[in-house]
Image 1: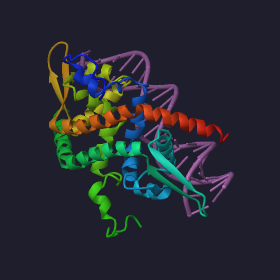
Image 2: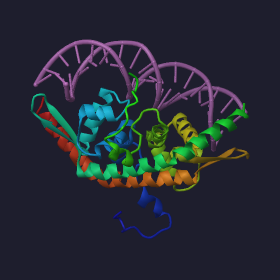
Image 3: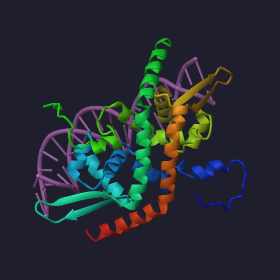
Image 4: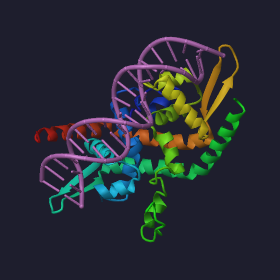
Length: 138
Length: 138
DNA sequence: CCGAATCCGATTTGATACTG
DNA sequence: CAGTATCAAATCGGATTCGG
């Protein structure tokens, strides 16, 4: 959103909107993949409801394996989106929560999820239409 | 005990925010995965700039293989997010563009990408801190 | 009981080559 | 140009095991 230093040409709407996620291997792309991955989205969305323990989160994000959840949370923690708080009690208690940065990202994710949810009927209809159309092509 | 018909009496504050993407196999989840997948995000983001041909898109979304791009676009077309327009010329010309539904979704994705882009410095810093911290454990 | 690390089968991915 | 077929490699998921 800064970079207003560029001369007002016509096609800078592109660059202003989507700088360079399209380059493979760049930092933004890597971060995006962590965040938008199959389990990243759901974990962040779930965490937005508040801090939660590992197994509770695992129950909430239906279908995730322990391995994948641990892996996802580690990546998110490493990127500074998730905070892992260890409480040295017996039994041990580990809480996961969002950092301010993580909250900002999770907000956008929630917006996305909302749109997707709202679109389900349209999508289902489109899918049916597509599959029907496909039959005549064979 | 396959999913007992437990009446959700307590925690419906959740459901209002994020209905049921958390259930595996549901339509919203499937759609989300198509949209938020590694290549779905980038394809939709690129398509938001306007209609574009297969190979141009392939060049724009750096790192995607032909197979994955074709697969991604087919899924998006099937879900009614992308429109595929075939022009029977020589050589053949196939244009991909967003449907209104696809545009709505792509807008949210762009918002997400923007936040991610803005956060890159913070993320990079967090990553460095995380990795440094990890060294003392070994 | 909470969570991390390891092994292995099954699925997914990606590079290359080929067809319309 | 647009897309499919094929095969090798990386990844995922589950069970098991280990540590606190």
